[in-house]
Length: 430
Image 1 (tube, rainbow, N blue to C red):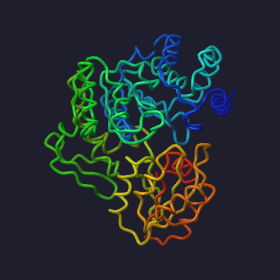
Image 2: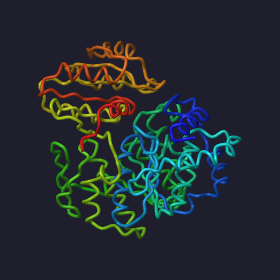
Image 3: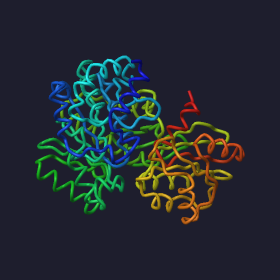
């Protein structure tokens, strides 16, 4: 099989959450533990950092990976989902796993593990761990797939745990209240292992405190650890000032990046305390060049300048609240929003946050979980949002561009998969 045939085989053979949603979700670690035994516990052959949270874990994961690789650590990075190519999930020092490695793994290991009935996520996670072990990485930054306590990745024993924040997402699997969701995410906190919390208040904060006490794990809240003297958002970047890092420029420009920056800097302090060698210069360079160093895309990213076209993968109420505030801060003649969502999100909650004065282009991503564009338009109309529906992302974006003046702003988002469809026909700026 070639690479494309291998991926098609994996998608057909194994349940894929990215495609079908909760039907592919297998709560519990039995499968992962069985796979781990089969592969000889590869994750024990390198150090790990474990990152959970509703939003921000992708940015935090990539920033930390960039910092570590700049300090000479051979650094694995495991994230999900991917946007354009499956190999984005598995990287070493910013370079994706080679196609031939994916083919070799599938040919050698799919058939012998079918009796375990793994999900796509469980088996491809083991592909990552196995590849990292074979390539002798020093450390791997591992992003949780969904939740924490019962997530497949929770078989690892990391040096440091990070939980970015808690918002409503995947409520049918994680719980209907923020404390319930927090308890699931807090499941990655392990005995004696320090944990960094990016953002938490009230009952959610108490959940983390109690779990950390129960596990005798030192806990550090980024909001208490990092105090910016100033944090100024410019067009295209942030400028942070604090005693340890004066004039720290961050290229990730979304509003949420202020919280993510504090989380990363708190994590850096804890990694240093654990004996990691991390220079101040590497922090500056990673913040300024994370997309080049790691391949991160889709975080408040400008793809065109006239009219400006910006995309963002934020897809739940926690992420959209920052996007809505960011849009308020932008200047334009007309705001045009191309939006599609998947059917297991809080669609009404997201729509209620979006600006009513914008012109909307309702669409659907090319996955089975996508909400039909006509249904999205009906729900949006009830929320006071007006526009037209289009059967695919390309048609919606092209309509928005055709109707735009040079000084308009087009925003594309609502789902990771809408951004993925956008990037299939609109290349990233070089």
